[in-house]
Image 1 (cartoon, rainbow over the protein chains, first blue to last red):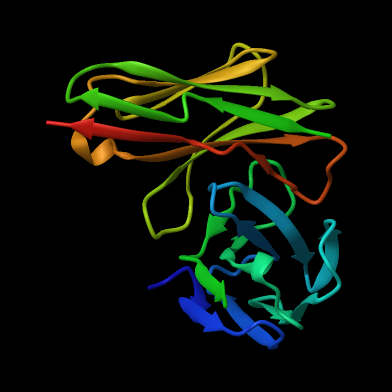
Image 2 (image 1 turned 90 degrees about the vertical axis):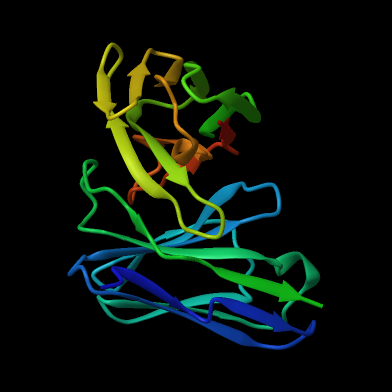
Length: 114
Length: 112
């Protein structure tokens, strides 16, 4: 049973296109996250939702729009893709916002913008 | 702004050769320091959370320690299956929402 799943695993697209990445967790968690990992392996948080409410919105271009239809899903839509958007995007979830609620990560989506 | 610096960037060990990975941090009030393991092509996997200076936690061949400025991940008698990238992250009181600030990791390779 996959705890945090993402689709697709690989995404290759042209500059200027719009694409979406989907994330689902079956852990019953209340909090979900999106992270971006660049080519130097630096992992940086982008967004966090708790009970479908946006609670972290880092300095991310507004071309990136997260959507949480329910607590188990957090999707990431990206408009007008740019070369610099190429990275691995990880979804994660935690039981809640308490400090000892560890974050469980999905397998990642490797986005390549040509 | 919270910052995390990990060293070395890469480390090659022989099987059984113990060593330590370093994580230096600056944070406006530490809520917690986290260690994760990341295998190639996979998401990070949680290892430890440390909350205050002097705290230590162990798991198999791994032992994490914490001071007011840094954390060490000690690997005792490593095996090839310990090869991975080890990531350190901090959460400060000002971040909120369980925001983690990660370092760039130490890539560990354990050879036979």
